[in-house]
Length: 375
Image (tube, rainbow, N blue to C red; front, side, top):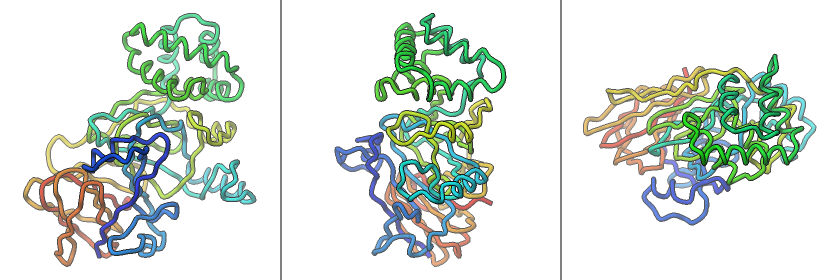
């Protein structure tokens, strides 16, 4: 069984006023449009062509949530728990009401994520930079007392990143935060060689969130610019924030977020630090296949899998396991299943295939993303 799905963009403040409209070829709504959800999540299940919503078909059993995400400004700095941490946190907060502002855990599941760029570039912060590199970057900021205090904290022994982030979010004075931001702005204006891009990005964040301690947390993070078709996997414990661009995002069906700045929402610093993984490592950008019609984006979780398919006249048959979604992102394509009936898919819309479908034929000329449960 194939079903055509759509949904209404969610108007979070960080959303873009132009990216989704331009992508879908329609007039902008003049309001921020941040995300379009495709799935059976109770917060916003997809609309089914002909009436009803997808959760009536799936009974809320989809293990993943597929999204179009359009960032016109920075999202909150955040981290997601492992499944063990989520179960523990969910149990500890059982007495809190679902809408209690103090609640950190909305369910007992983990929330690994994969983002793939649809715009020419997609800008993000991902993971923590090695301490030795951040010390070198701080050398470019001059000798303001707050900058030296930050550098001194990174000169210590042990898990200095965890301690430094705790200091930034809980103990640093507002004057110190502002002084460091001013030093970043001055250094960015001076075009400091290898650090120019990251400092410009941090200045951009500070313009949206002036004086926010999260701006200093951003200074410790890897600055990443994805090109169209490149992907980034965000594992449990990895600090991250999207800054600008349009992308396809897929994640486990969860709403568990621990925030570390750039938001008016609840920030529980001790809980954030307990979930945070301060391991530093190269940013694992997943690049599209240089040839062939199919690009896979391998991830180390079983909740979801994502493939990009390009068709150019000859239909392509894709084997699928479990309930699948086909999201059209370019051109003019159609999807057919076991009954061979073609379902045209508008750009920005989805065809859902129930679990009894074993293969899908993608025809036409264009590009689509295929979401399934992982293997």
